[in-house]
Length: 489
Image 1 (tube, rainbow, N blue to C red):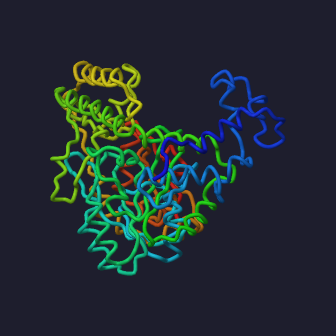
Image 2: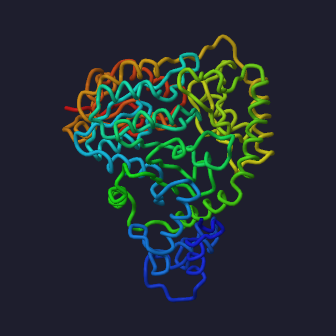
Image 3: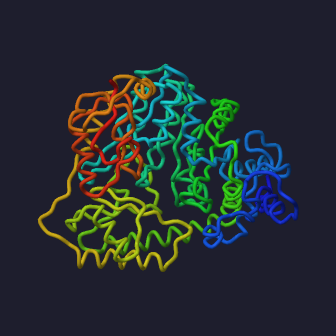
């Protein structure tokens, strides 16, 4: 049992920041002395004294033997892993590394079609062949949820040579599938279960939260400690357990994907966030859950609004839990799109959501929120419902349904082949039935609507244009105005 009070990396960084010396190493601002004045005015100068490089006392991220190794061991114990790696390039590089460590060119990997774009990048980098599964779909709310154990079992029966299964747990909406059952099925084929748990780093610290992925049987999980806990943006962790994954391949993959000049500010924030949760996690999560429940109860009572709840999801579909700190509010009953509601709340009431979609707003309630935040949120929705409500406007879209019943089966070549193929740029209206050569996704949540290797369909083009017309943002592609798309020539 390790001493979770310790913060070895943070302590070493603090000591080196305070040590008087003449710096003849990177970074060029030399402990803040040469920092631009606008930055100094915004952040002060103290933080730049800690913006250090791989000094002897600070260890090396790619060959840790000192304080980074100690900090990662503490994190492994706190989060229930056998081994943990700190990530400074976000969960994106963790997902990519997980695929690179388990799949090579031509290897099959089973995964849901509503994966984050980082998984598609992992397919491109590795050359793996995706076997996409349809997530369960709520046609009323137009929300794609998780894949089910039955879907995974069927896929493995058809593709017993698959090298891994990857799933998302929880989804961006906080929905958690039956991960224990999926793990059991996957392990019957002696292959690893990889989990994108970017939004579930808090699960290990309170019994009222969903079961953490590792406790449910996952072999590898990637968590964005910055998304829901107290680390700085980009600071994430990759955890493994068991012997189905070669830890050396993880380390080698991360050396390809992470910066050779990692930010020690980010690394130290992971050390501090781990200590905070190990010592105070249950108290902090209890308070967070109370705030979330207050928001959920009060907003659900506002006419015209509804919130996503577990009973609607249905255990029969294999969904066992909903992260109660994630709040999805359906605003279409007000005659507004989620994009319109998001803009009004932000500009008029200084309430900023995590992301908007055609019918919904999704909000993250975390350990950093306060009672005052919840009051401002509720009052913002209350006024929105009273003063901005419209009539005779329905906001419906069934793109997700079309996408997950048709688009999944339209992969003509591997994502890697399409990404590196000779391509051309065509006007959007001329791309129907062509093979896409780039990633195209509304962001957030960063779930690709098109990816390299897929056939472009009219329904997808219509949806992308609809999202853009309603105020959404299209990312990943070369032309974010969506006048053109890159296709395989």
